Amino acid sequence: MIIECLKDGFALANRNFQLVVIRIIVSVINVIGFGFFLGIPLIIAIAYLGFDVAHARHMLPYMADNPLEFVSRYLGLALLLLFAFLSFLVFSSMLFLYTLGGTLGPLRNSFTNAGLTFTLPSFFREANANFSRLFWLLSLVFFGITVLLTGCALMGGIMVLVVNAVSATDGILTMFLRSFAVVFMIIICVLSLLASVIFSVYSVVISVVEEKNAKESVKSTFGFLKEKPQALLFFIVLILVFITASLIFFSVQIPLRIIPFIHVVTFLINAFFSNYLAVVLWGSLVAYYMRASGSPVYDTGYEI
Image (tube, rainbow, N blue to C red):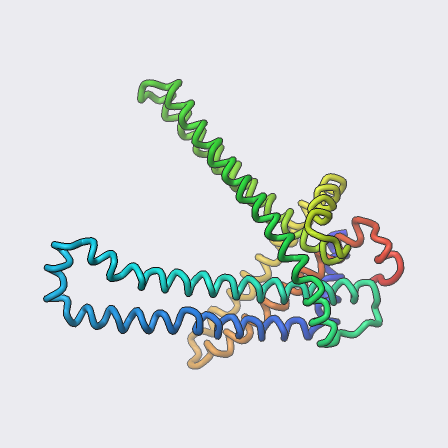
């Protein structure tokens, strides 16, 4: 079913090609937002620091004698930059969620109805309907991921303390146990993070496809992954396929970089290619879930 779902993903992306254009526009808005939220504070910081550098000869002896003055002088500047960065993260995250909701909704509708054509009002309608649902869902999932990673860190600390308590000497056995504990915890953390990413992605797909709230989506995701553990394999294969495609695509561009003024063209091509692959990826996941779950929505409509 992996090949069929990949074909579904490409077919859905081609049928909803406007989603690629919308995602490129959103990427441009993110770049503009980055310049707005961080560019202005950085200009202020550079101007402020430039004034201090010009008077460094007189200020440094005073700052050395009064270190608290140094902290109070630049604390406000550091807080301004931190606030600007956090503001940009919030803006970018909200824009991402809104675009994601507007992407998954039309892909679901297009999968269930082959004759359905993409329209801009449908994008905004789905984005408005799914935004709050995805916001609360990902907030709940990220809270769970934080608890999980915190538990892994605590378990790692306990293991280190136990190894140090058991091994009082600095012999080969002690080094082996410490190395084993570190490697074991790294593997556990990596696997936990991978499982969290897979769970988050499927919970987002299920939330939009089934139109469920956060708690129901999490519960349905647990049930789906328990019943269909091959979904984990599909996700890993999907990511590997797209990583391979990206590496091949970018390697082809390497010889072209010697051509003058080609960077702007390659940037636009990369933006199109990466966003097209993103739509294909989400379309493949929507198709896989609706096929694997035997969704009645899939039974009513559409096959490739």
